[in-house]
Amino acid sequence: MRVVGPRYKQVSSCHNLESIELRGKGITLQPNDLHGHAQLKILDLEGCKCEQLDLSSCRNLIRIELDGERITLQTNAFHGLAQLKMLKVLWGYICKSLDLSCHNLESIELYGERIALQPLAFYGLAQLKILELKYCKCESLDLSSCHNLESIELYGEGIALQPLAFYGLAQLKM
Image (cartoon, rainbow, N blue to C red; front, side, top):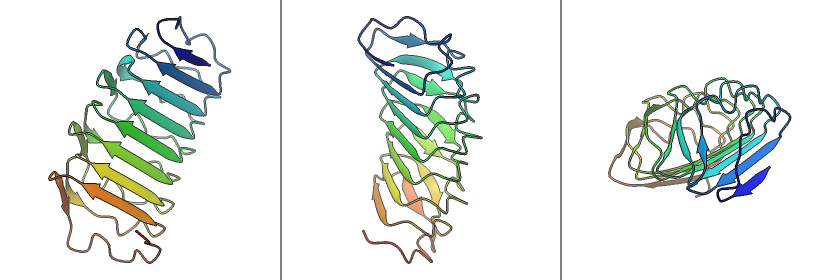
């Protein structure tokens, strides 16, 4: 399902959707609109209004892209998303303690001053290949358990590294 602009009705009853792309300021999602979407693999939201969106029943998500200042998720929104490979969160999204315990993540792009990461946010992400953090807050970044990292891009004053943050990253190319 691809919707651009205010033509969005309600996806809560469309449980067999594999892909949802919603774009536009006239679109509002309720916290439980994605409940029961066990088949959902791709979620792309841009400019929508979503407060405390619950993704807990979307266990087959492979890719999540969130862009917009009106999107907030529950604290443990990504917990239990074992199939998730790509996470992209751009600007605006508010999360004070983001939990990234999705052990199959291969690519993470987080941009925004209002995103704060837990100290061990990247622990156990052995499949992670690409990491981009821009303007995020992370007081004690440790990537030493991300053995497959090939590319790292860190930008911003809010990111502080542990002394051995890059130890053991033999695959690192950039």
